[in-house]
Amino acid sequence: MALIDKGPRLGFHRAQMKRLLASGVLAVFTAMRVYAGPEPTPAATATLELSPFSKGAKEFQAMSGAFFFFDTTQNNRPSVDYALESLRLGVMLNNPWHLGLFSGNFEVMGEIFGGGIFEGPGDVLAGASLVFRYNFVQEPRPRIVPYAQIAAGGVYTNIGEDESRGLISLPVEFNLQAGIGSRFMVNDRWSIVLEGVYRHISNAEINKPNFGIDSVGGNVGFGFSF
Image (cartoon, rainbow, N blue to C red; front, side):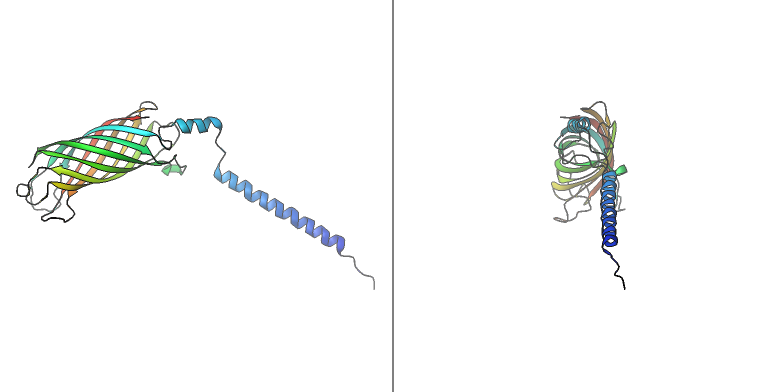
């Protein structure tokens, strides 16, 4: 019986498998590259570095607003409506991520505020907050930039416990905020800012009564990036 020489055929199959494996690896890397998108050009990188939303960019905002009390206790407690002036200084924490509709970056801001009470007991509110914001940045040079933010800090007020019927009972209280807003970019540095905000003032049960002051309102102002 003649022996069948399988060497050339086995060598052929191995070469074919190597070509198929190489083709598969190339296809995977090609797919990964397409998914990741093209590498930024030097011009695009320079544009990002000059963007007011690039990592490390700073921003100053001056805001004015009014806030109106709503009674969550349903006990006909007095309204506490007030107007505030706010100054903020922030820094961008990262370059904008590319996430479709959720593209954007995080920003942290320090805020000081103060103003008068124009309806209800007391005369003044003043305090400071730390603001944590997400900017929805769709491109390196956007003209409209929506954002969502939360904030927490402290507030001083001369509203008395008796005259507020237990809304607050300490001169220094906690201040919590949640809001949405938008920048309207005039140019790369200046912007007009509009926002709607919910604010809560209470002492976290440190002292009772502590029904808290809940308010909704809004701010308008300007921003400057540098």
